[in-house]
Image (cartoon, rainbow, N blue to C red):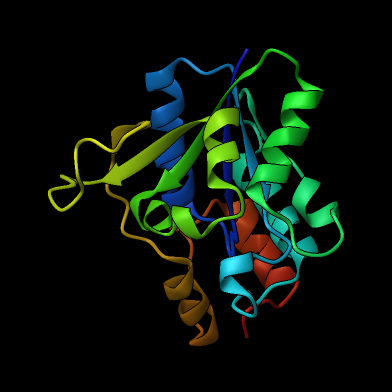
Length: 189
C-alpha cells in the first residue's frame, strides 16, 4: 500500500490544502491520503484560533466523499505536543509494509531540520515537497526529497480567518460543508 500523510493546523482547512494533495496522490499513484490535524503544532504554539476538535471536524468535511482520503485524529488524541515522527511511527505500526509519503509545502520543508528527529522522519517516509506554481525560487534537487510541481491555489487560512472576522464570504475558498461548520459554530469571529 502507498499512503500519503499530510499534516497541518488546518485552521481552517481549504481548497489550497486539498487540490495540490489530490494532484500529488494521482501523480504518485497512492492508494490513500491521511490528513492529520495537529492538536498544537510545536513550531506554531499559540497560533491556532479554532479548537483541535473543531479543526478535526472541519478537516473531515474537507475530504468527505473523496475516495481514499481520510482524516487521522492521532495528533489531536495524543496528549501533549505531538510530532510528525510519532505519527509516522504509529502509521507504520498500524499498516505494516506500507510505503509512506509525507507531503510538505516548500515553506514547511525549509524548517524541516528544526523538527524532532528529522533523520527518523526520512527513514519512515519519502518526503514529498509540493511546490506551488512555477516554483522558480525552489531548488529542483534536495537530497532525499521528491519535489512535485503542484497547482497554485492562492488561499491561506490567515486570509480566510480575516474574511470571516470581517463578515465576508468564504464560499468558493472552502467546501460548503466547511463554510457551514464555521458559520454554525461561530468560529473566527
